[in-house]
Image 1 (cartoon, one colour):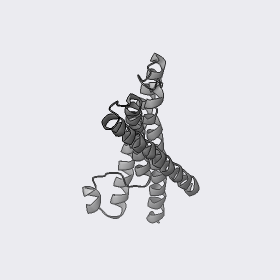
Image 2 (cartoon, rainbow, N blue to C red; image 1 turned 90 degrees about the vertical axis):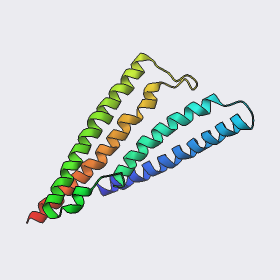
Image 3 (spheres, helix red, strand yellow; image 1 turned 90 degrees about the horizontal axis):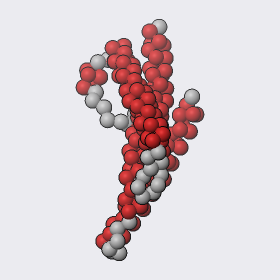
Image 4 (cartoon, one colour; image 1 turned 180 degrees about the vertical axis):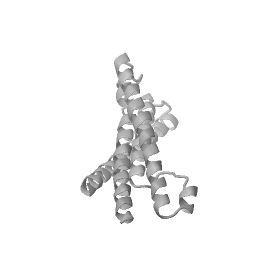
Length: 162
């Protein structure tokens, strides 16, 4: 399982770097075309918005996998041993439920319904369902990482009981 996690980490880090590079190029071109050439590029404006959505959500999933996502751990700091492990398992369960229900299920519904209505972006003429596909994709990646962490916590908890 560790090899798969490392492979996913490598893929996501490379994917985020590529998205960020394209985002920087789009924004730089947008600024140059607006202020130097005097004719703003509509295409790069829209593309930058879509790239920012994808980068933010896929980056959040990647941060979840690295365990570097924002967390409020006031209660966790005060607990130790078995109580701390149980609370961590409970937190992971809630986050998996959120990512699964809101991002995967809700995001899939949004992307699919948008695709079915035939909504396309004004400038790029891209199916907006593909743009919104970043929601269930990021939720699925978060669930993958969280389930791996859940399994590790359960294994550690069962080993430490004996």
